[in-house]
Length: 218
Image 1 (spheres, rainbow, N blue to C red):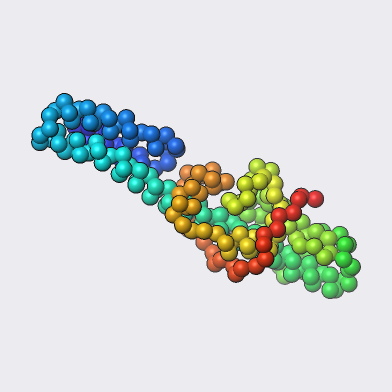
Image 2 (cartoon, rainbow, N blue to C red; image 1 turned 90 degrees about the horizontal axis):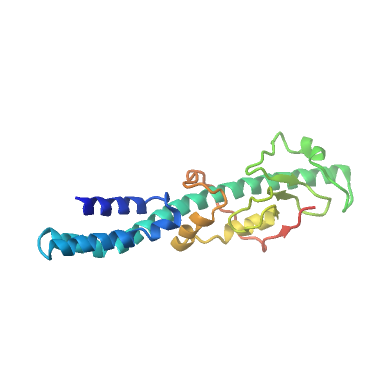
C-alpha cells in the first residue's frame, strides 16, 4: 500500500507546479524505493506489479509534467497575447487621436504632444493601463509608446521598463510560436509569475507588419 500511495502521489504532483523544478527529481528516489521493496517481496504476484510500476514511474511522471506545463504555458501565452493586444489597441487609439490633433492644429514635426492634448480626440475612449504601463504620445512625427514599469516585461522581451510601439507589438503577435516546447517553457518564463495564469482572455492575432521596434524610455 505504501508503494502504491507513493507512486500515485508522485504522478499527482507531476500534474501540478507546486514543487517547481524539484518535481523533475522526485520520481527517481520514489522509483528506487518501490524497486527495492518490489525486489524484497520477490519476483512474483504483487512484486512483479511493483517492479513494473517502478520502471514506468519516471517516464510516466515526465510525460505528466510536460503535459501539465504545456497546459499552463498555453494559458500563460493566451494571457500574454490578451495583454499585448489590449496595449496595441490603446496605442492605435492614441496614434489615431494624435493624427487628428495634428491635422486640426497643423502642428509641425518635432512639436511635443501630451495625452492631455489628445483627450478630446479619443472619441470618448479611456486609455486604461493593462499591466501598469505608461503611455507617451511622443512628439509629432514619431510613434506613441507604451512603457512597462521597471521589472515588468512582455514574454518576448525580458527587459524591464522597455518601451513598445504598435509596430513592435504587431510583429510580436504575428511571429509567436505555439509549439508545445515553447508553451511548456513559457510556464517558467512568463513574467506574471502566476502558477496558473488567466487562460480565458484571448483575442485575434493582428497581421504581419515590419520588424518590432523597442525604443529607449525618454
